[in-house]
Amino acid sequence: MRIRLDNHNHRPDPMIVLITLLIANAGAQMAQQLNITTEAIKTTPPAIVSLLHAGGMTPSDWITVLTLAYLALQIGLIVPKYLEKFRHWWERIRRGRS
Image 1: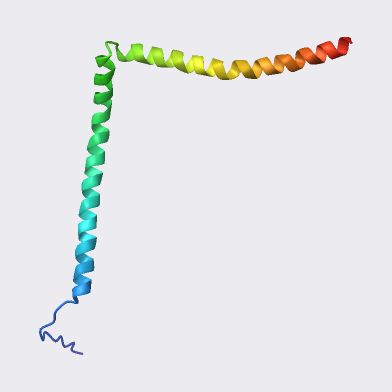
Image 2: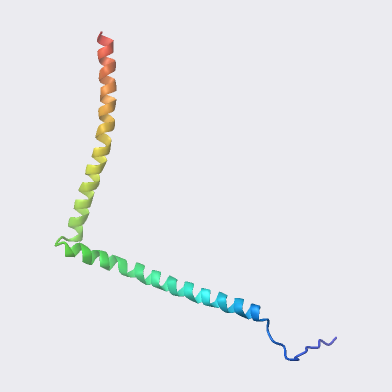
């Protein structure tokens, strides 16, 4: 069995060529964006350390300050909750005496 190929001025469909080029271009742009993102992520830790030193404090000093701020926020959120519980308990005690 023979397969006969006709090579009579076979021109590709312009629409298919356009779509193929657009897909190839989009892939190249996505790869470039991925490279930029990857490089930005790689430089982030040294940039953070440099910024921390810019304030005149070592990174361990900044971690201590941020930990204390976090604790203060947590205490600020917990205290009103426990004060409300204490008020309810105190009211139950006072009603029990009356």
